[in-house]
Image (tube, helix red, strand yellow):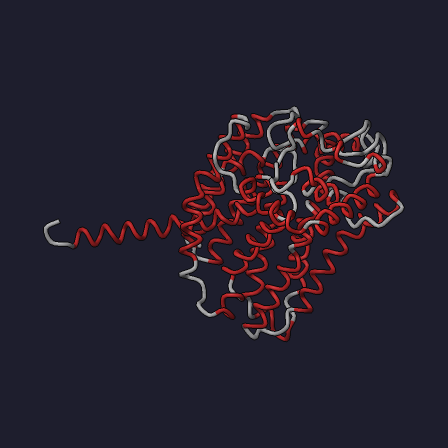
Length: 442
């Protein structure tokens, strides 16, 4: 990295940190139900209980069907530990957690965006990606909320960057095994993402398959020993929570008890073939959709039973499920203001995805020109890993529950393509200007 690039990157990181610290100060030392941030109320309450010595329980009946003082595994253990650790050090002050989070994410997210842009394209794209990440309204907003999104997106970017570095490093692949340290760090990064949101477990095989194929196609030796090491790290990170859950619930719960609830509610026949992101009052409440005979089950048992019923909705009417999944596309990719949304939501939506979407799409299209031409090489390229992540991650949510905030990890990748788009537009305009100057009589 030359000095000019270094200065520009430091400037982007400083801007990112400043904006996120201001957002943290704005949200302050209280926890409110702001648009798209209801989860932070639960994390704050759970961390407070943990600091008080009550473990992972709530002092009163809690969303979705957790009884007072009953065990809960509905929420990320890792993020609750982070929040409880901050509260233990500084007292029950949400602002302290917001400021620490804003500082860490303010540095790491744009840096990792730069790193990915440089790895896949060039340093200019990396710098633009860092600046756009720093300015992206959704990232600024969520960086100061007491939710998993900021660290989760950071872990995903880190995992993608490490995967690309690993796949492209010939020296570390001699005789089929990468450095042990690299495998461990890669496993830790993906493990952090999984502990923040268990849904990411569905993405891990795609990361592994891409690395295996990239190494194989480049004849750099087998990646299997290293991937096995990374997989072992992930399993070891999950195992303590699986054991903890079994001791409390008396049944197998891999990590969290939320997949069944989400899949059941997202595919309930009450929607017909048109998905509604937030259930309106006229259709009742989410709790009212749960059969009465199941409401006395504990959190884990109810989650598993609801997953069974949700899968039953799919098998009973696959055609409805397909149409319902397709109807989630507008909710997932919404970029326009809505009268049903508050001011903060509309500003964040239009000032981020709405503003950047044209150059994201243009950059995505132009990125194909720099991608390998043959299918074999394309599948092994870093370009394809970014495409793969965006398509698969989007598909998972279209088949389950689609909310705008669930799209943010994809936004973090699309921001890199926005960098490609702006760079290509600049090159085109400069080239057009030069051609105009060289034309006689102009």
